[in-house]
Image 1 (cartoon, rainbow, N blue to C red):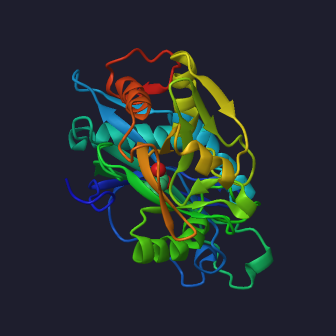
Image 2 (image 1 turned 180 degrees about the vertical axis):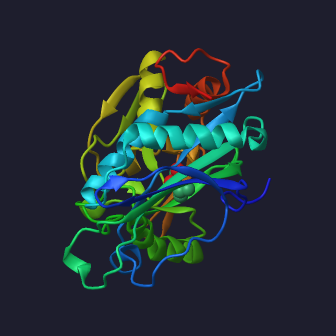
Image 3 (image 1 turned 135 degrees about the vertical axis):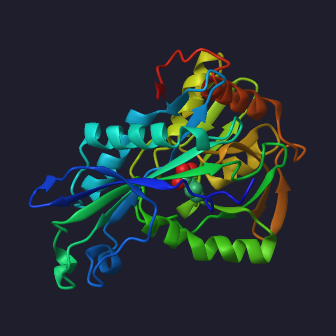
Length: 329
Ligand code: COI
């Protein structure tokens, strides 16, 4: 399978916003977008996106995982950036039409079709630094993908940064490119210096999230993760794992914890990253103050594997969708 995010379907769904309303959406051949060099997004970063997946089942039909929840999150992101808020039914229809068109491009599980709705401000006005864009484009890209962090058989290494936040508290729960830009420099530095896959951002010792995924601690009895606040992304995979863990009898502890506690937990708990791209990926090593600390024996743990499988079983149609997370195409 090609590298995650580098292969695209032949069509995109696209719609424009102007004169106070969304225009007629269309499916169009994938092609470069043309926009004015003064477009608001290019100067003032008026953009947000989503990421979710469609799976192809043995019956030949596709199922989209948590479509409506992702659309609701995109609406919240748009609102926080003062972008025109996509109409939920309009965006759902765009996604469904695109997936129906590209159904033959969806690879069999564990691969999938990654869907990337993206909203950009297109107002032509470089003076609009303190003004909302009144024109926008919303498009949906479709990309057949495999794993982002591997198939769960290899453990990841995280650099624990107890100073920096991934982004600002104001935009932490907004899915916007600027947050990934903020995490990029620290992540590349951690890769170069320690061979780390990601940075775990823990400002003032508060364990938050990595650049591309949420962070969880798991043992035979409980799952621990930070409670929702505006400082970090409200991952749909995080939420799904917590609900499946509760179904399986784990106690779910959404609570703040510090780097000191994290280092203490490393001998008793498994650690994992969750996200649409990450699925649930095991963490085997933490680098803190230049020292490598193993998470248990450093190998992927049984509880992480159990919860990863529970999630995938729903996504692949092996287990019943008891939470109503799937939309059939
Ligand atoms: C996702 O998990 O969908 C993301 O947006 C993360 C990105 C690094 C691929």
